[in-house]
Amino acid sequence: MLAAALAQIRLHKERSIMNDTLKMFLIALITAVIVQLILGPEIMKMRGMVPAQPQPQQQVPVTAPVGTVAPTPAVAPTQVQPPSTEAPKPTIAPNYLTLPVNKARELAHSQGIVVIEDGQKPVEGTPAGQIVEQVPAAGSPMPNAEIRVIVAAAADSKKVPTVVGKQVEEAKKALEGAGFTVETVDKESPKTKGTVLSQKPKGGDKAGLDKPIVLEVASLPMVEVPKITGRYLSRAKSSLKGVGLSVGNIRRVEHEEHGENFVLRQDPEAGSKVAFGAEINLTVVAPN
Image (cartoon, rainbow, N blue to C red):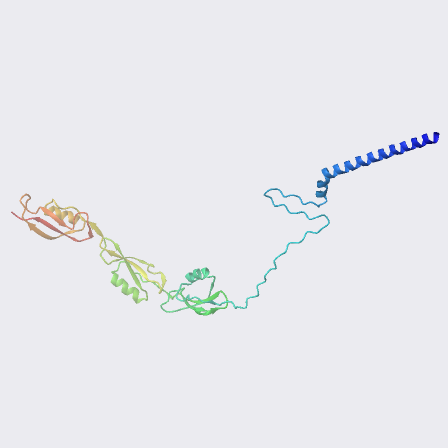
């Protein structure tokens, strides 16, 4: 009996131990499943096994898995242009002949060319500073961006004769006899018509033969015609004489209201501009 009781107690203990072990196993299994369900996706993200979802409307680069090397983007090969075998076209020299050297320099600068003055030489009838030779010649290829030029030298200077106060024809004769050319400019003056009032350059100065001597010559001054209609002839003559004018042709006509020599019309009219000493034609009343 005792042996049977001990055996029964032993069996009960073994069953109790097995029940406790089974309970522990079930609790551990349930805990592992719960942890896997809750924390599994985050753990996989951290290990790089699940790609991160991109944010809406934003480009997010894909993270390569841990331990791998991201592929290098392919780069298109650079196309190398073969060297050009075509020889550069030579620049053709423009024509600067007959241009003043200063004007040629301005034009050349706009064309990327440098004008170098190599010297001067006297050329009859050519103004000083005008280009008379150039190298390279116009239309020739230019080895570089330079054109070398020769310009006309200034003519020999001479003493200018004094001609102020002389009549213009006499003054011209004196100046042209000395080798100068002459230009005249009219100027109103009370002096006798044709009198030289001034000269440039002045008499006694030296000047080149390539530039003209400019003379100011007296011309008849312009006079405003006074109003003489409505006056009698004697008084009209006095008015005209006072401004340097005189009476020209007189035409006489009959008139019922005005007496003899009453000025009816004048030609030119009052207010007109005429040369000093001009004549004014009148229409007056004839004798009764």
